Length: 124
Image 1 (spheres, one colour):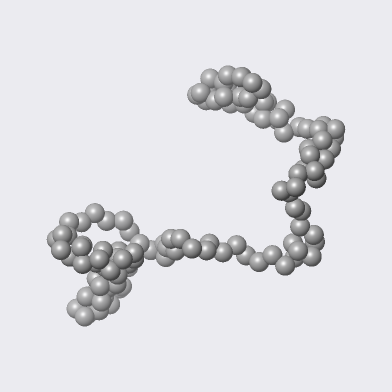
Image 2: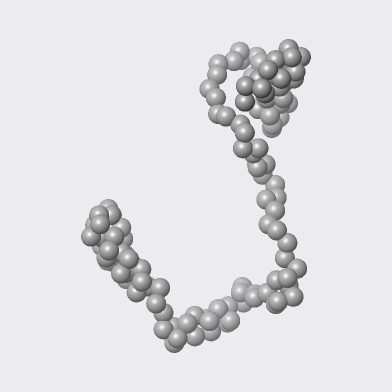
């Protein structure tokens, strides 16, 4: 079901008939006149917070870097739920952030010591 309020289309549920109406509305909203485009561009040009890049500045842009925060994952990790002794978890957490990574590293080291890592790799 679609409702119009304050020149805004609100989607409550979407049936095929509503989808057709939504696409018509979307097409109308996307079709702006040259006068509307000129008004939008003029308002953008007057806005002191808007700063368009020159061709030279745009050419100097590099790839986006994530910056601080959670690092991108390897894509190979699998979420698991397991029950561990409270003192083991407390010891890893006491070392600060990254405790789950350190726990993963400890398990990987255990695999290397047990020489079962190569067998597991062969199974993958």
